Image (cartoon, rainbow, N blue to C red):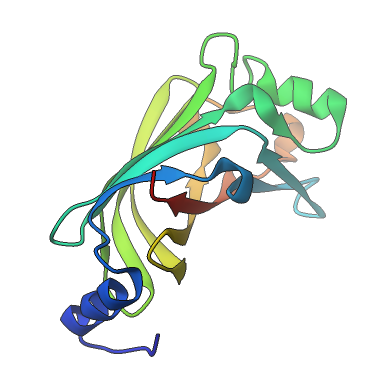
Length: 184
């Protein structure tokens, strides 16, 4: 698709590529990914992690507005370091025993350009929820599948994840979701 500054034309271009996008879509978990990146040791290294199990669905309304829900199994997080992963699952971070899921709720994502998305997203983790104004990108769109990517940067302490001896762990987390949806 060519980039077009007229949003109405962009919605029409996506509709032409996708066909009739409105309706229900299901997450293709095998081709989707939820990951996070956090600075550690005063920014000298970055801890990279992802969640291995997620599920979700989305709805495209007739006006093109997208809503949906992504449920991430918090216990499935991995940074490829067993001891660190156990700590991240503990009460100092995700507290998976009491809060087994991270839930991302998309409220009203709209196409604002040829492939640009903007809308409200709520993220619930460790028993707390925050709402964000989010931007995203349509990576691919076809009649039976679409892939979207959204990135958020937030303060982890807002979720009660305050562990950081000597201030060595950054408060800022960069989270990215690449979600592929298919028609059920």
